[in-house]
Length: 84
Image (cartoon, rainbow, N blue to C red; front, side):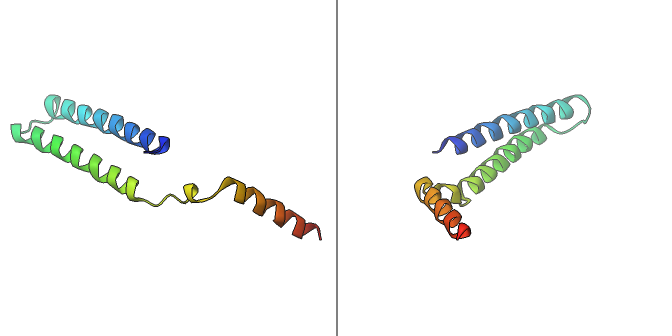
């Protein structure tokens, strides 16, 4: 796992945890709900978190496929062509 993916996963988890707590507070303090609503809220938050995380991990990241040395060479060659 790359550092970028790990940071995304941790950030998503923290965000969804905060969203879950806020939802629990709203349901507990202001909106009267049945006890099963708390379970569905938890299942929904976990499901959305997993779907977003899997989508992000399957998304093709093209930045890893580029070789830095090859990119530097291409920039150098393109500058020489422009000067001529």
